[in-house]
Length: 299
Figure 1 (cartoon, rainbow, N blue to C red):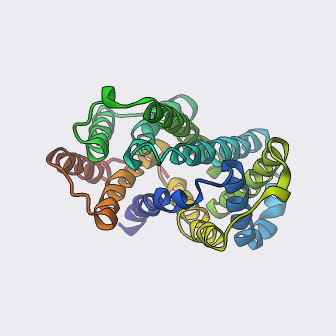
Figure 2 (figure 1 turned 30 degrees about the vertical axis):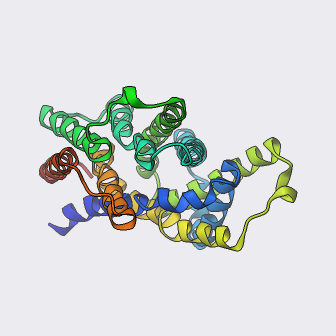
C-alpha cells in the first residue's frame, strides 16, 4: 500500500515546495535570469556532487537516447523553463502572481500529449476525464472568474512566457521519465543539475559582460541558497523519485497541487481569501487527484 502511495505523495510534496518558488524568486527580479539559473544549478550540483561522482561509471554507459533525454530535460526543463518562469516573474510590478501560475494549467496538456506519443502511455477515458476536471479546477483556483479579455499587454507577455515555460517543463516531464528508465532518480537529478549549470553558464557568458558585472546582495545570495535547499534541487530530487514510479501523464496531474497551495500561501502571506469559484476549483482539483490515485499505474 505504501509503495503505491509514496510516489504520488512525493510529486505532491514537490509541488507544495514549488508553490513557494514564486514568492522567493520575486526577490531576484533585478538579477539576470540566466545568472539566476546558472548560480541556482551550480549550487545544486555541489550539493549532489557525491552522487554524481559515485554514479559516473554508470553515466558513461548511457546510450544515445539517454543522452538526448538528459540534454532535453537540462536545456528545456532546467535552462529555458526556469528562464521563462523567472522572466515572467520580472513583470510582478505590473501583474498579479496568479497570472504566472497559468503555466500549471497548460503543462499537463503538453505532458499528457507527449507521454502518449513518445512513451506510448495508454490513456484511459477515465484518466482523460479526471485530468480535464483537474485542469478546470486548477484554473478556477488561480483565476476564479477573471476573464482573459481583461488582461493588458504586460499580462499577455507574462502569460506567453508562462506558456513557453509550460511546454519546456511539460516536455521535460516526459523526457525525464525516459531518462529515469535508464538511470536511478538521484543520478538523473545530479546529472540534470550539472548539465543545466554548464549550459546556463555558457549562455550567460555569451550574452553578458561576465561575472565582472555581477552584484548580488547578501540577501539575494541567501534567497538562492534557500531556493536550492527547498524549491530547487531538493524539490527536483523528491519529484524524480515520484516520477520514477509513476506514468508521466499521472505525475503531471499530481503537480497541479501547486496552484492550490500557492493560493493558500497567498491567503496566509497577503490575506487574500478564496472566492466561491476558487473553492469550487479546489474541490474539483482535490477530488480528481484522489480519484486518480485509484488508477492502475505501471512502475
